Image (tube, rainbow, N blue to C red; front, side, top):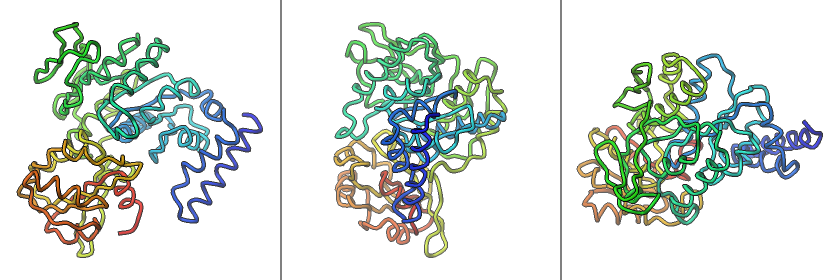
Length: 406
């Protein structure tokens, strides 16, 4: 490693330490920014000699990254990862610079940044989960991300890919690749995949698959398949039996296990055992003690697809629900997506509209005939609801709740 790179790493670590001790943040982003400002090619240097796997998706990439890392560790493989969720170049540089020894890196990467980091990291594997609408004012339409991913696969035809066969945008993105392992995860959210990404005709959806009558574009055959709480593999069936809640986490786990088994050659049962007891990922699904001694579980939801999955999980449960929404840059400043989420699933539950955009949430709940109270402070809202409480929060509210003090 060059002298400039070593200086960059030292300066970055000092900046991160200063950020943490002054309470300004976790220090990861500022650390990486300082590093890259001093050594712009640092990502290439700290990634050199490593086997790098990149995990990306609109929803679930943080959890999938952690699950894949744990599956590899279960086989005794030392792994470095950006476990804080800092998934742009600064965060990647900080993570790799902080932990230089492991020869395997499993890195969560923001969807837009995948094309920019594949070459500097000399990535050998892409793990691609899903593409849905998310923060249109920042990211643009789903198609724009799919085009970027397709360009990566087209310009790196020998790059190994593990991909979700049930998402039309992902399938179209991966078409140019020659080394693909497909895993069928199911597509509970289809509102962003009504038309064929190849020819724009309407897709035909069955219970399990999609196909286009106009051009023949269709869901590929997948040797790996999620069947309820079981991952079906060419060698047999693996019970997931996760501690993490929800169907969406079974999808994340199926994707991670497929990558561990098919690409890294990890024994299936050993890999599954390595992820079963994981209960929390970067604050997701954590619990917080309320003033009266009850626990409240905190979940992150960022966009219509993510919110819908969380609400489907909550609908049959006997829980009170706090909906905490902000509209900062990291959340997306446009909250109109609220009208695409089926909040009607919460009818009959004790519900609170909360966060800085509590009134926007309340209007949507009124239209959905969901009885609720309005309390901008999620803590006060949770304390005021009966029984078991789940707080579903947008990104900046989630960060405040899981890293701040209750």
